[in-house]
Length: 585
Image 1 (cartoon, rainbow, N blue to C red):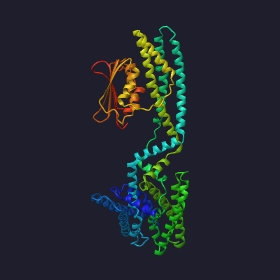
Image 2: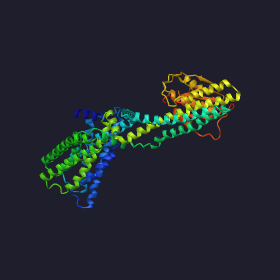
Image 3: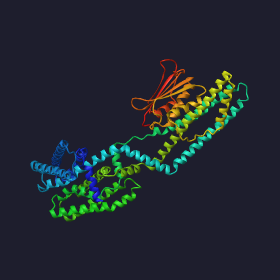
Image 4: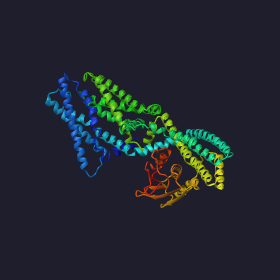
């Protein structure tokens, strides 16, 4: 496992972003108070404390200057890769520079040096070993996740939908809504059928019957379709603001497998090394360092299975593991130091508390970098775990309800209304012309439609674009002349046939119902961008001044992504409706 982890670490620090130093200022900001408190135990007054802070700030400036020099040299190289071992050594070299500047400044300013002059460069080397690798891993995590976020989130959404379907909730929701809509729709159909039968026994029945059909379509069905359409738009108002990349990566780190015990222990040991070396005999310093390392490693390893077990209960399991391991290892270090070198430092509690906060922060920082060391499947699993189960179920249920409601709203507003209005118009036309045959055919069509089940039936579509256009024109075939001019291959895979047919049906219904059109031309072709351009040209009354957008406009926007227009003809009366359907729809 350690071999795999090291190989992943090597992969993460290679590449053009390895020395970007994006997170380096944060490392300096975190470490500055820690270095001041830990190394300033002999400061007697505020003036000396200020001098010490200046010294540490100067040393960190030297460290930063060296790292930025490396970065600029790295950018000039043709080979934009860096390996783990050189990166660690270069990081430590910066620590040597930091320690040397500190030692020289102490001598020049006249502060009491609490350790040998040459100890500071050595301590600086160890404390800075992990700075550049951690920065590189964080950068890798940031860019990896940012580049793959859309793909991974889409994968999570598919997995969530599969689980939602497998749980039976999708089927249950669909069945319940369909039953409710079908019941309401068929009850109103029975009432309309009864009224229609009565109207046929009255004189001037054609006018009364057509009026009944038109009122039923324009009032009952319109009200139900608008109610369903409004219901289908509810989830849109509940969109959650997307978190920033950095915050999202950090949360993912909490759900990924726990950080490697050895990596964490080695990193924290390099941070605690200067504390162990200060004014301590070399044997005691080595013993304290080993004690800290072993305690940190064992506590992390022992707490790992416990954290994994409780990770399904709380996302804080892994951070708590880091905090507990930090506390245990620092407590062991403090007890050992007090026992073997009781006179070295009189402020163990303050320094220990500072070291504890710093170590915990380092552990959480490593968890931030975990997405850069994890496989995509692990990140996808973490994304899925990051979604609250209750919110997930509610969200998917809302989407399911919205999809069903929109499907039924389009069906009622389009197919049912179109058929009823076409029959009503045919009755009115036959009455005006005194055409008994047309009247009987219209009455027979009304009987058939009102006697059928109004429930939406799944249709296996095998029609192409031209056939679908002709099919949707057929209910109005006795009232208008229509022509379909198709200048494209008719089986474009990027165009959803049913949604396209709904748009055609809506366009024809509007032209006949509102514009009183008697002829319509449907022109299908590809535009310069390679998208389907569908143009409807009619000879109706044009667009009224008080025209407002309704469900029809939403149907057009749904298939075009909003790329549609409706204008009056410039060469005579009538309307031109143009829909541009992208191939990716």
